[in-house]
Length: 328
Image 1 (spheres, rainbow, N blue to C red):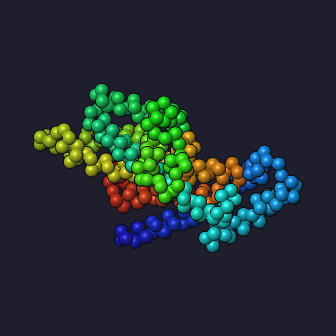
Image 2 (spheres, rainbow, N blue to C red):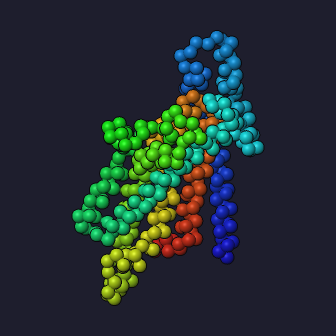
Image 3 (cartoon, rainbow, N blue to C red):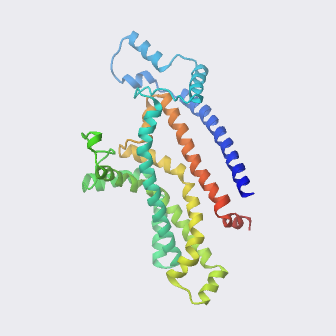
């Protein structure tokens, strides 16, 4: 029965994903068509070109192609698995996305783990020490983080730790002037630390406050009061009865943060000149690289949808207590 329920659930999610991608295609294409940016002028900059050359570039960019025809051509290629060729990089869009998304996944994955572990730990500490100075300090810290713009924090950290102290590189994901074969693992880690720490701030406050409130609720329950009466107390009590009751809800909330994580990655990658999918999306938007921008939008939608689906699976099947609490 549970197996059938899971299959039905995944079937509905698949239909929702297809509907989402169709809607994203229409809306994204329409927004790009409404953009006032001249792709040819954006591409050539201030460089003077002949009228003949401009005509060639307009044909290459599809400036004079009717929007409906352009959309149908692009959509037909997408159905066949062809995302087209990037107009600014002049290589297949799927290759650009593979290169850039790999770098972004490393950044987002590292930040996601840091924010989850740090937020959960702070929440447990605050919940264990409700009303104390430690609890108040963690709450102030979390509220401050929640109110801090990501790009502003990135600039501040960049100025302090890169410009003034010189502990980390000013930007990029690899050292300047070094070929890909000569870039070491430590070089990549060195360039990753500051952007990852900046991006991880996004999820720390929400996870910490949720975990704190959930732990306080659990520690006030009847079975925990009974455990206290039996002599259990301190960290041992939290580990035995509190940790397992707050872990899965916190993990569920963490998976739901994929959309915020992706949005924050775009800002962080711009500040640190990190060669990821966010920076590629900005370049594609400013230079009207329609195939690349639409390809990135579709991949991003799938990425966020997967995170939400994992959260829903945990909600529906892994921990039925969450659903029972909502009903109550």
